[in-house]
Image: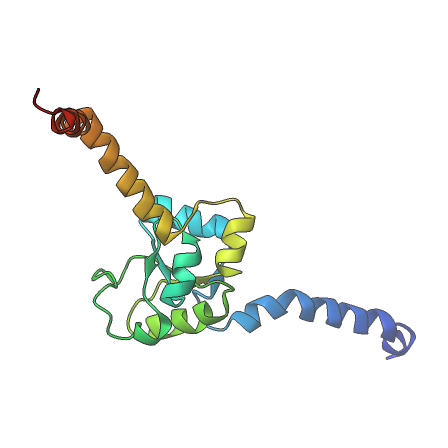
Length: 171
């Protein structure tokens, strides 16, 4: 008893530091809580994880992780865009990560046991310098690719020759 009285400060310090070490485990709750961007990339590359952005369409258009599917939070339940294989890891994100945690919980209740939120959302994805796409960029790349394919096929030259022949006036 004398030891406890003389060293009460050390005992309190040990309890507080132990509580701080256990807090992250307790605060996450159910398994499959949040994962960092590094773990998300590992799950995508090694375990065929599916990246789902639960942001609204305008947020998704402003910038989203490369390869992410957009399923707004309000349309998540019963969405046909979710993978049919419920064993795949689902990595849920939104611009800040706030809605992603709730969305991951809904998905786990729906049977997707490996649903997890990406900590920090799209902002953390950008900070980790991982690929970010914009919806307008994807459309522009596709249009540029189609234009290049048309030019390579000679369609662009046909139009020029038609223009030259219509400029000619009979003498």
